[in-house]
Image (tube, rainbow, N blue to C red; front, side):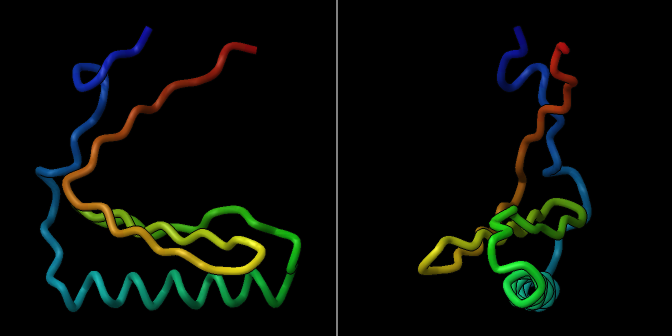
Length: 82
């Protein structure tokens, strides 16, 4: 069983983005959400942009949109058993 934080990769050592750079990622995610809604209104898959120590994730719900900005985040990569 994978355990936090030992088995996770820490992205806090990556390039630290400025607020302006993060805002550019937020604007890109907003555009991606608008395109997703226009191209396939039934697609509610999350969209994201990630660089250095920052991850920007956008979600669409039936009645709203949400964007999360995560800095100094951890990630666990693994394959599910078939």
